[in-house]
Length: 310
Image (tube, rainbow, N blue to C red):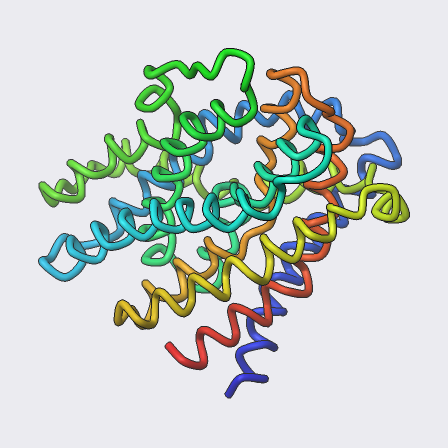
């Protein structure tokens, strides 16, 4: 059963990374470059991903069970980040303080949007996306508080408005009432949301491919802590969370969806935060690309393992 689950999960990850490869090739030949992809990021961030989250609420029927599962997913979404903070605060106490900010942020915050949502949709369908959307909301809240404080130690400030006025939270605030009130949108409104949401996987993976096209794996040797980030983010954190999930009695789709979120590679916005707060953007890009590349191997194994015990 385990090896069959590895095969299924690896096939889904492989499908996504074939699209990533297309994106990398397009960058190399100049059809769709990293510079162009950066301009498309806003489209993905502000339009496409919110449509995916809203659609996940529209495709789920509100029951006592699904409502409780959603609340559970939100709670464990926050717990995921609190556990990650606890683990990685201890790992990066020594060394260059500025570089450690990059390493710590990279180890705590995962790609729960651009990587997790397409992968979850491919493996679990809309129900999995429904639960992962709760993790995206927790990610936005914690990253715009603790994340900003950690990266901007000079001021230690964050903008409270960003806790609500960001695409992840706004889309949940739109989708949640529709879910709770069992609203059936007319096709004239639902279909555009559905069509736009359907573009997330290819767009996200093509953009990611242009990013990976500029990765030099031999640079890992120059920054050995990148390997520590990969170990922490891809193996230690998901292993700890799986134990917590099982002790809490989680199972089925909810368990698998939360596990996929916990084993996701480093968040792409590590680079954006580094640029905003005058950190080493080159190092941030190297960490994101390298950990993402390694996740091709780790994610199928972890997903298959948890599906076996789910």
